Image (tube, rainbow, N blue to C red):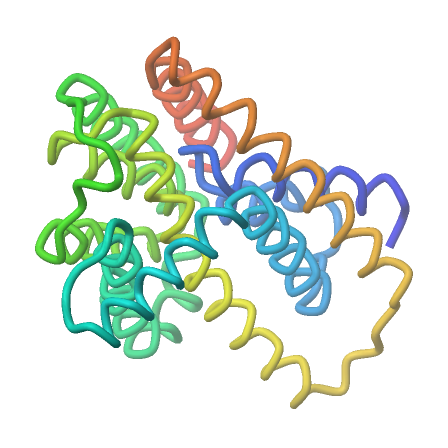
Length: 264
């Protein structure tokens, strides 16, 4: 794979994974628009590893506290400060896991088309706009199991390419009264088990295949996607603490219109 494709795709994955604009849509469409060969399964795995390392590093203190409080909640049979948040992340992952296992083949074969991506890009721009309008003041520490399930069900919708996992979970959280920053932080924490599951499935496929692995390309992809994803998390949280989601709503509308122009 040429070096410029590695760099471009790594940065696309790193920045779009945690923004409400759909990383899967961009990774599907970029090779189509530029006439590049598909990046392949091994490269996709490397990109997922990079973004996973980025979110784990950014939230390392939170994750350690969450695990500590979850352990104490099991040991002493009562809730601690962040134990409910931890259980919420786990339970909120169940819907997307079930839907992914049941409909994986259908989604891969029937929904990875430019028309579907263009339509969902615009439709869920409207959902993001609605969520931004109703953003409240709750923090991620106000999460309950019921709210986590609702956000988790919304996350399952993101299996439709172009929806954006982060976009739909942030939208759902804001509609439930969470602030923009809290919605984003919970969405990022919720991404950890999802990326692990998605990356694990891709790793199994990779091990069962006869694909030749180019380790230099993969390590470059891990580093570049991880670096860009970390920068994205930092900058995005800083931006929405002072502003709204409107720039991303506008971007989604423009992207959707462009996709309809190009492919329909």
